[in-house]
Amino acid sequence: MAKRMKPEKKLFIWSLVIMIVLFCGALGYTYYNTVQLHEKLNDVQAQLAATSRDLQQDIGVLEKTQSNLQERTGTLETGVTSLEEDVSDVKEDTSKKFQGLEGKINLVEKESEENLQNLQDDLKSISIQSKDFSVIVEELLESVVTIVTNRGGGSGVFVEGTYIVTNYHVIEGISSGGVETHDGKLHAMRIVAVDERADLALLQIEDSYPDLSFARSVKVGTRVVALGNPLGLDFSVTEGIVSSTGRKFDGTDFIQIDVAINPGNSGGPIVNINSEIVGIAQSKLQGSEGLGFAIDASEVDDFVDDAIAADT
Figure 1 (cartoon, rainbow, N blue to C red):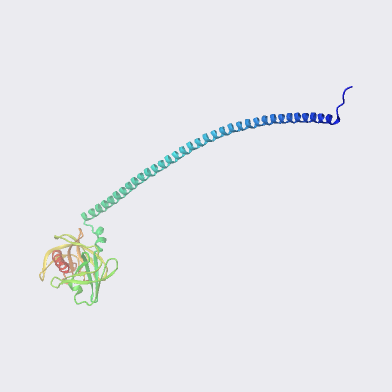
Figure 2: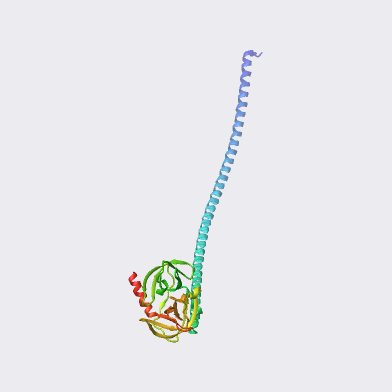
């Protein structure tokens, strides 16, 4: 008859068996989990590798895109620079064309002014050839003045800048007086020199006006105009001719004209068609009706030159 095991030993064995079974089960479970974990890890590594490849591809695409952007930016900058250069060239070309056009306009204006001046000169020449004083009267009157004094008045003419020649008897014995120019202005005057014998006086004002020169010679029959202030009529013009030259009174040379010289005309110029003074009107010598006398230009010219030379 077999020997029965003790309960304690039997319990130990079963406990050992159970422990072995549990250990094996745990070991198998652990192995299984380890395998699963390795598989998952491999999957994760594969996914990471794929993601890394994708990232690398994306980075490559980004780098390529960045490179393309840089190239396009460079191209754009080049285009902008080229456009700026083109704009600058257009501006420069436009400026040159504008300057050229402006120069042409100025040239046309200059030529037009010259042509107009030539036309005016031609008209003036035609008028002079036809002995028509109307074209120069307005210019002549700018040189003529009215002498206003406490004893009356007379006329005068600018002969050099601020200097005016007139008759001595116009300013003889005055206590006050002034000069009225063609523009209506009244100027204070200074008596520079007088020649009682020749009945000439040289005055001066501060302002300068157009002056007239003296004729070198005068011929009988020359057409002339008397400019002055006859009988208080400001800046009047009377036309006539030189009737005679070489008249001498009290040692003074005179010319005779067929224009009556009224007191207000005294000191005013007798002018030829070339705007030259041929004489200074003198009302003290009275001829018959329609006859007048003027101090010869050569004598007046000598008096003016000497007086201005002594005054400067």
